[in-house]
Length: 182
Image (cartoon, rainbow, N blue to C red; front, side, top):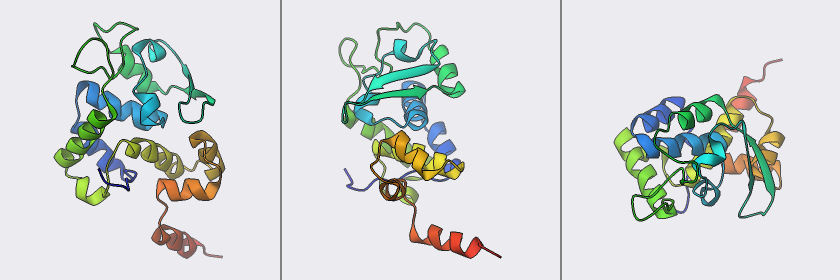
């Protein structure tokens, strides 16, 4: 697995990625990017954690902090469309054995294979499970959300860490300076 993974910054590339995924795997990408959760927390979600709900309340595994997340319309719609799935089943259920979630390694394989099929793997660079969370942060930034709010949402200790995390490059900083006209 590559050490460095990146956000999928282009909406076009995100749509290609979604098109390369189906069923549970597409749901993994959609929910992962929408919620911005760490993969270890994401994979523990059960259908009943989201079905018929407006918010999700979790204790983050890494920080042990309680986090409240508003569920957007896309997630509510996707989960409502799940048929024949009980609330006590894992949202990203493994095909192996009884009601177990897929592993982090399987999630990694799913995302990498989809990036290859979508033709974006080389363009993006490193793709991994953390790509979902980084893409979440990037989309917030792209939509004008203040960096300190993104910092709080991702539970980072400083705005500088958040900027580095979502992949703000020197070229993008230079473009911002060039855009200033007085």
